[in-house]
Length: 213
Ligand SMILES: *Cc1c(COP(=O)(O)O)cnc(C)c1O
Image 1: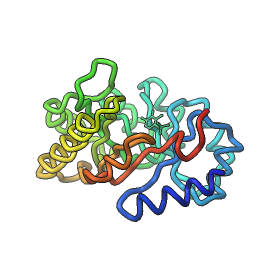
Image 2 (image 1 turned 60 degrees about the vertical axis):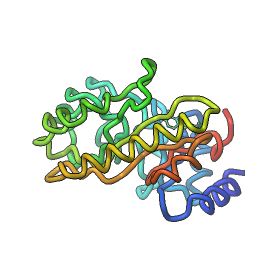
Image 3 (image 1 turned 90 degrees about the horizontal axis):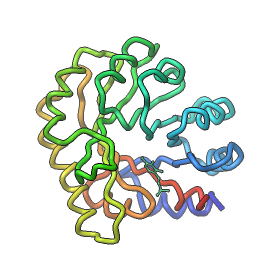
């Protein structure tokens, strides 16, 4: 039952982090079941999937876009999104500025591990990116997001989370206006317990909460 798993996870995570239920592989019915269990934050990575769910979810459900957002799709979806976790291109920020009727809370996705399969900016590119989007007032930067490598090697995973936290701490001095880097979106079903040790404030939990697909 989603409800039992949600309560179990809630106890583990406590008040340190907001749990995002990654409902991307799950049906509208299962997503509503999670809402009824108390979930208010939902993570989606496909535009078709999430628009269908947004229609049936009550107003107080918040939707986090955790996949790659193509700039030409921004205008169709942005008013239905509360958070974007994958911002790594100025073109997307520009479209948000142009088409959104509200400010959108955004995380900059950072590719800490350096794996070529992963999206996100290299850490050293983030300062310049911040300058490029500083005047886009609808893009409210609230923090950084990363994905750890898929490995059993806890040390390698820990290092990625530790580096994101250090980058967040270093970038805080640049906070002003629409740039307020405070939050850390890191940790998924198999590594959220490690991410919490390094200060995660948003964890994105799919299979461990919603069930495997
Ligand atoms: C799918 C996905 C998750 C959740 O993955 P699980 O391993 O099922 O918890 C978290 N973050 C992102 C960016 C994802 O694409």
